Amino acid sequence: MNTITDTAPAGTTTETAADIAAVTRLFDLYLRSLDDRGTFDETWAAAFFAEDATTSTPAGDVRGREAIAANVRMAMGLFDRTVHFSSNHLVDVDGDRATLLGNQLSTHVLASDGGLFVSGGRTENEFVRTADGWRLSRVALRIAWKQGTPPVIP
Image (cartoon, rainbow, N blue to C red; front, side, top):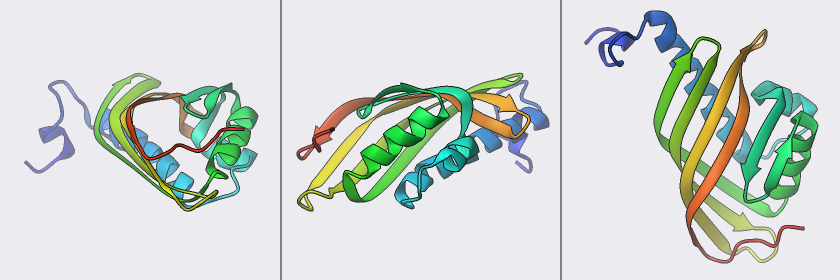
C-alpha cells in the first residue's frame, strides 16, 4: 500500500482522497481551536464555517457565522480548560459537498468551581466547498452520556 487510495473505498480517486483529507483536517482544526481558547470572533468563524452554517450542540441551536461565534464564545466561557477528541471519522464526498460522522469525547474543567465535566457522543457534520476551501455548513453534536455536573448555560 503506497498511496492513500490503496486503503480508500473502491472508486475513490486521488482528488476525492485529497478532499477527504482536507475535510478531516478542517474538522480537527476546528475542535483544536476550541481548546486553544481563541477569540471566537467573525474571523475565527469564517475560517471554519460557511456563511449560513448551523450548529446544534448542548449550548443551543444557531444559524449563521455571527451567531455561531457568539454561541461558542458563551459556551467556552463556561470552562477554564477543555480537550475535545474526535475519532472514527467516516467521510463521504459528493462533488462540492461532504459529510463527516464520528465519535466525540469532550473533557471540560468548569470555570465556576474547577469541577470536571466529561461528555461523549456522536458528531454529524456537513461541509460545502467554497471559494476559500471546505467549510462546515452543519455541525450537530449528539451527546450519548455525561459524567460530572454540566455547567448552567445562561
